[in-house]
Length: 276
Image 1 (cartoon, rainbow, N blue to C red):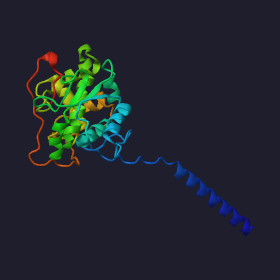
Image 2 (cartoon, rainbow, N blue to C red; image 1 turned 60 degrees about the vertical axis):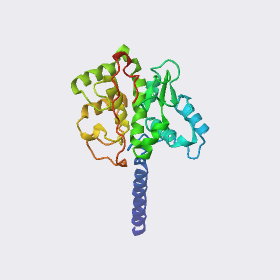
Image 3 (tube, one colour; image 1 turned 90 degrees about the horizontal axis):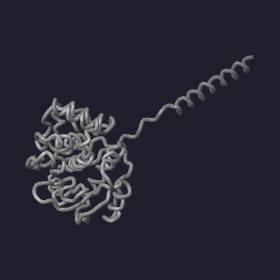
Image 4 (cartoon, helix red, strand yellow; image 1 turned 90 degrees about the vertical axis):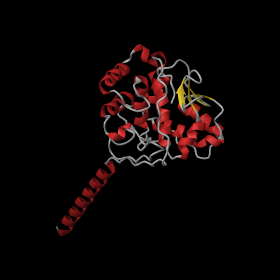
């Protein structure tokens, strides 16, 4: 009897242990934290990780194949690899959203990225320097790189792509009608955008992604409504940093780093084509 009871007890313990082990195995595993990339505290998990050691030609081929942009310009060089990396990582940081696919669908043909010189103050523009292309002046990017303000470049890439997304505003789609209503209520967002509704739209997006950009308006905690718009209407709930006004873990730019400055106001029919 004693042997039978001991055997029964042992079997029960083994059964409980098996159930516990199976339960433990069935528990969901927490996702691995995503490492920040330049200018973006909480990017999407990498879809197309930046290929360390790749040649410029390999990087160009990767941008075309992975992100669907055609490329032009003379500034795709070894000397501009740091700028090319910021472009690549910014695109990849948004890849878990439909931002890129959505903006590319707004344009007939293939949206291009032109790495080339821009006359005047602008560091980037949409369809001004080269029609159908976002032009990025990598020679000017170096100023931000030298002062440790890479976040500005991340913000600039997302900003200029925002103009592409907004290129269908003439048909007054729902996202644009909602933004115009919001702008009428909230008004000024950034120094650069000033009183331009299209530049405000692009900056609301640019600073939402580039949370580590110098003097980010969201850091003040005064633009919750614009933040919620970008989160809900543009990025389907994906956030790239903490809530507005909360402390960020960012590299501080060197003293004297250039801040985004507004350019001359454009006629309404040209709004959205202007560069920064």
